[in-house]
Amino acid sequence: MSSRGNWGSRVGFILAAAGSAVGLGNIWRFPYITGKNGGALFVLIYIGCVIVLGLPVMLAEFALGRATAKNPVGAFQAIRPGTKWHYTGFLGVLTGVMILSFYSVIAGWTLGYCYKSLSGQLAALGKGQAAALFRSFIASPWQLILLLGIFMVLTVHIVAKGVSAGLEKYSKILMPALFLIMLLLMVRSLTLPGAEKGLLFYLKPDFAKINGRVFLEAMGQAFFSLSLGLGTMLTYGSYLGKKENLVSSAAWVAVLDTSVAILAGFIIFPALFSQNMAPDQGPGLVFAILPVIFAHMPGGMGFAALFFLLLAVAALTSTISILEVPVAFLIDEKKWPRRRAAWLMGALAFAFGIPSALSGGGMKFFSRLPVVHVDFLSLWDKVWGNVALSVGSLLIAIFVAHVWKTANALAEITAGGVSFRLARLWVMAIKYVCPLLILVVLVSQFF
Ligand code: TRP
Image 1 (tube, rainbow, N blue to C red):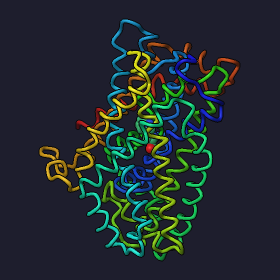
Image 2: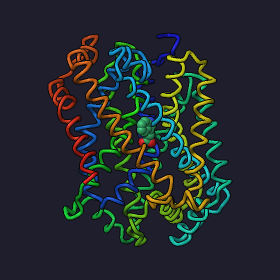
Image 3: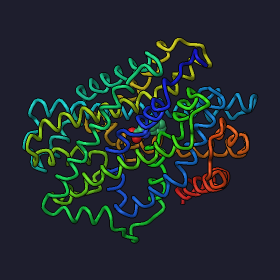
Image 4: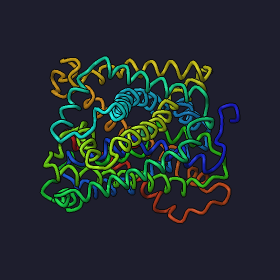
């Protein structure tokens, strides 16, 4: 195991896992999905999904990873050699490359906005101007491909260097800094005239807005935000020593991750409604409203630059965790050197990212695909960021509960005398609740 790398410390592991979880999923994706799905009721269902589906699956991934000390493909093979279960691992590798592709495009947006803040283009924008600026920004192909490339090179460079030598030591300072700026933004947003309408939207459930799609979106968002379903947490668990407490680690990651997402909503919705802007405008939502908030703050452009920079760092600690999955696969199973594995998979993700970079107007075809009538990025986000993660989580739950068996998983979780008071509940969840619920939500989409 030492040749694969290892975490320096317990805190290092929690920081890395939380760094993976907290990212664009919380600050970019959560507000836009919440806005699209009607607000408060979605938030409630989302929190339910985190507790009932996310936490149990996270624990299952940690246990499977640590027990086998392998990448997702190798982990399934180690426990059930000669079966087809390792295809779950392949699905994870594929999903990882695809999510990395469009995720890095959005990360490129944050780099672009950091530059725009510094160069004064974001200064004193009203709501119409901010939205127009964003529209012309996402329609400029070369700029977006360049930003995608820059971000991908950063990700690959860090992953090529190895496991514990990386960003984690910086993120100890940078992530709390991001959180502080977010608190400040929340205060500004909440004190804008008309902010109450946004609070109402965010906090007061409207039961007329419920439908099957809301459940799928909430479930997918929970898996996406907690980095589940493709073997990220499995891989991170595989670098972990036996002394660590998997239960409390999972709880910490879920609490931190969910707090950041909820906080992001308290920034976006009050400001949005105070400007009479629509909550259901899709992936551009936060980029259209954040400049307006900064414009209403003294020293706003300094804060804007810092915020977008820290957001890019948060995205980076997530992308390295996604890239780590295909890279660990090539290292373990194909005996590739880490450096070569990282560059190859990064290049693949870059290539698949290009259509996403062109889907905001850069190229007509990708901006509105035939048949499905959505842009490429939205389609990829839905297919890989939602459906594939749900299928992956379903397979992981079934495998851990019914193939590996909960007794073996529990032995791994409680190794070294770790107490797990909610063990019974976890067994119920991973055996019955997770598989059934995920299946029902997925299948119900076809009706
Ligand atoms: N959870 C991260 C975010 O919210 C993104 C991410 C990292 C991810 N690793 C993942 C999503 C694995 C799905 C699967 O920004």
